[in-house]
Length: 337
Image 1: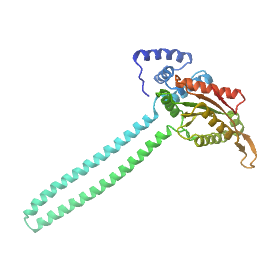
Image 2: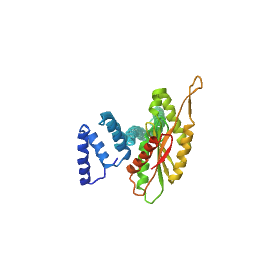
Image 3: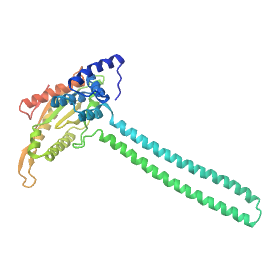
Image 4: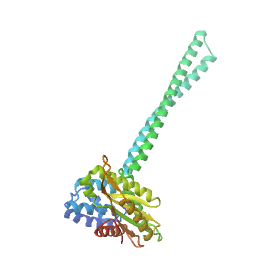
């Protein structure tokens, strides 16, 4: 990420960050300075949300969590992958250049031998010297041919290696954007898209829907994390099926999901949320061996339409407030902000 503040603004952010770091017993190191500088700038709403949740849970931000948040939000993992791929591309190109130079040198040497042989053939001393010229030319021709074949194989190998690197780079970019469990886009994509929506000119309608799986911790405790993962995977599948583009369903974190609905007003968003809620409540968790129903699943929804003067943080907070109201109303319902 780029820091674009002027010196005065930067100093103000740092002035705000240091007391917070002291308050929450955050070690004063460059990583934490950058993390909390970004926090007080309110530039990445999801980062602020995660830090607030972490502080609420632990009373501080543990070192491992700080490093994870720093890597997820402050630096761009894609840049790391790109730089690594770039270095490997340079290495391949350097090796290939060296091989090409060697092949060019062999060709140059052969040209010299060929010119000398032509001169000698025009002025042969005797039959033996003619045989020697022909044999020498034949040997160097064979050597050049082998070198050309060798270089061709090395070129093909390099091309295969470059293709492999391109695929790895493409996969790394995808991995940085996709939640591996549900197959949905992750918070990083959510932040980027939401920032673009908030920053876009005009009054294009957009609605944010926050979703939380009801009593998910208790479900995990009762039936195990593997069963819990299957529930989250089902949510991912359902959201992808019911929320095609330009809607953007994401895994917001843990058992919480979000849907950015571009061009949808609040009534349309409520209708979609109700459809999802009804499909989710129809899920029946069965025992694999007996087929006996052992549990059901429900979810709570908070719906909030973007206002013209909203910041990303304000929109998230209002949608989150509606979600908590849904939980307070007995769960398994849709509430609007």
